[in-house]
Length: 372
Image (cartoon, rainbow, N blue to C red; front, top):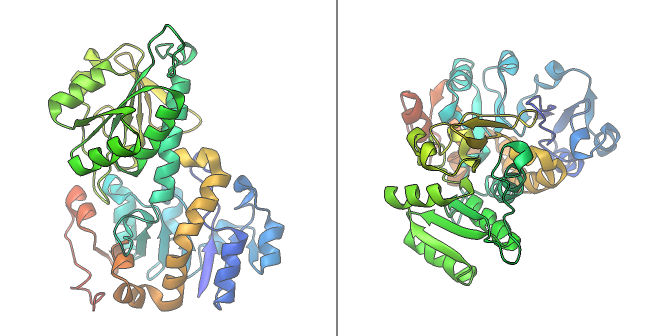
C-alpha cells in the first residue's frame, strides 16, 4: 500500500503524523511512504531524515494525497476536501460530531475515515486519544495560569499564591485523562483544586492518588455552578467519545463568575463544555465574554509539537500498520477496537455518536460486513 504523510495546514499545527522511524516500520512491512516536503520540520524532523529512511519526498501536497492511505494529525480543512477519493483510508483525529461539512465531504467521496479518538483498547480506554489528553490536560493549567495574568485580561492571580495570600482556585470539570493530568499540574503549582465528575469511583480514585490534596465533588448542576462561580480557573475536560461534549457552563453562569476568571475548554474539538465556547487558534487564542476569558484552542498539543508527535505516533503506529497491512475491511473484522475507530465507510456513517449529533442515518459495521 502507498502511505501518504502530508504537512498539517491547520493554524500553528506543528505536529506530524509519523516520525522517520515510524516510516521505516511501514517500509519494513513492504509499503511505500510518500512525504510532503517540510512535513516534519515543525516537530524537528528534516526531509533528509525521511529520505534516509527510504521515503519519497514530494513537493506538492496533491501528489501525497494520491496515496492509498493518508496519515495525519488533525482533521482535514476545507481546502483539502478536494483531495478525497473513493476507497481512500484517512487515518487521523476527526472529531466529526462537531464538524458536519467534513463529515458530509467524507461521505460524499466514500472515504474510509478512521478516527484516532474513537479507537478502543483491548482493555478499554482510548489508546490513541490518551497521549494527547495527557498533554492537553497539563497544558490547560500552564495556559490558564498565563491568561490569569492581568496583562491578558485575567484576574491577576498566581495559582500557587504566596505565604499570607490565598491560593488560586482551580475547578476541573471531568476526572478522566485530561482532568487527571490537569489536576497533577494544578496540585504541583500549589493551587486549591476541585474536581467534579459523575463517576463516584473515579472521584474516590482521584482522592486516593492525590492524598486529599484536592476536593472532589459529584457533578450535579448545583455543585458545578457553585464551584465555577468560586473559581479563578475552570478547565473543561468532559468528553464523550465521538459525540458532542455536554454543555456544563451556561451563558447565564458567566455573570456569576469572578470577573477576569479563565475558562480553558479542552473539549472544544467536540463543541466544548461551555455554551460560549468557540474554537480559537494559537495565533489568537483567547476572547472575553461577559468579563470571562476563554482559551479554546482546538489543537493545544500542537504548541509542544516534538513531545506531542513522539507521544502520538507511538500510540497510532500499531493500528496504522494493521490498516495498511490488512486493508480497512479485514483490519476492522479482525480487531473490534480498531473497528470502533471507523467513523465513515463507503458513503455511510458507521459511528453512533456522530450520526446522532449530526442527524445522519447510522449503518452499523455488522450491516456493512465489517464484523465477524
